[in-house]
Image (tube, rainbow, N blue to C red; front, side, top):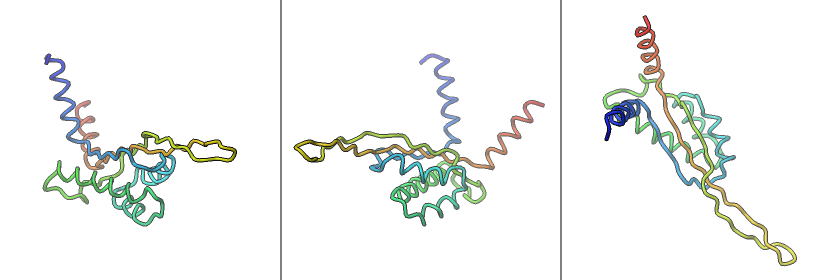
Length: 145
């Protein structure tokens, strides 16, 4: 590997140490229905988002709650010995992308068949820490002065 690639790979590894991510692939729910719950928790702090997902009656709420708990667990693995309350975690980004579609036929009148698309989606959730962002902002300000 060349020196430029090595340097950029090291920089990418350092950047990934402060990113706390969880992914859910091939979720068998329509992306449109999942986006409604994703929009409800985007930008909220973790405890409030967990409460919303726990008491929601939507089909995708339990799956998104489990995904959020997984992202919190990933944060704990990278930050051993720190408390979640001190970090002030929040849902920084959540994206719902379309997954594969299963195409089926349903019988219709006059010997015809109608297509049915069984949609799925991929959800990516990224957590952010308000404390780390404040520290990064102060470091940038100090570097400029």
